[in-house]
Length: 337
Image 1 (cartoon, one colour):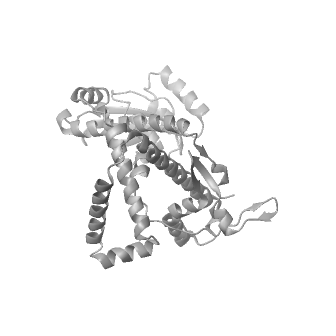
Image 2: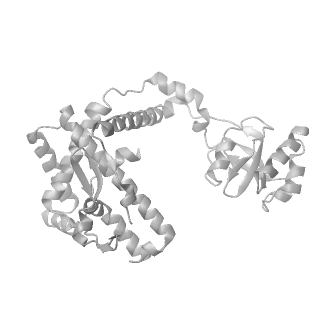
């Protein structure tokens, strides 16, 4: 739901960038840099200055952690550019929905907007202990009252458009939830569910495939022997690859390993080679114990999950169509040049 979150979040943000970008040996002024267009949504332009304001909170955190010269750190620089790209895409999506809201007539009346804005501000004042605390919060964020009200207004319009147009026909039925439960029961195991797990860890896929072939010759009966001979996991090798009893919902082992493990539900079942950051695993289970949460206990959770998935799919589809209608252009190549 990352994109949905980016659409409805209120940012209390502001920053004036002091970056200098060279172009054909001519140095741009800070003012020119701030006006550089990073995206176009219809007739609306999103500039470097707009993006800098939105990135201000993250920029402050990064500088605090890595210093003012954080861009000299290749890894941090890459992560920051990725964050800028994601933020820019989110700003484009917000601009798209705000423009489409006018066409769809999902913009609340001025009176309704003002009422909701006043309610939000009242809530903020209560949260910050009164008018003075609220004003101090705005000041610390470098945000004026007018700018904050504009952000609240945009959020209200976006929420109204999502609820009354994009999502209005989405409804997950109890039967759909039941079908999902029946097809994905391993997602709803109890903490008692698990198996005695063994694995063989090697460095390359070729090694894993050779061991897999050897296992098939003996129907997996030689698993412990091959683990002692080939496994490169020092913690389990001498025990025939045994990791002991592992719950199917365990978070102690890496995700690719656990994803493969959850597909093994029969005693003696052996996985195909599975890659993780440690190498290639072949996994075997014995003494499998399966117990599932009752459907009624997870029904609400499933409906919420499926609803969110359908909402995201519908939003993505609408955004792609609207981007074409508005001739959206995004110039990510201009980020941090």
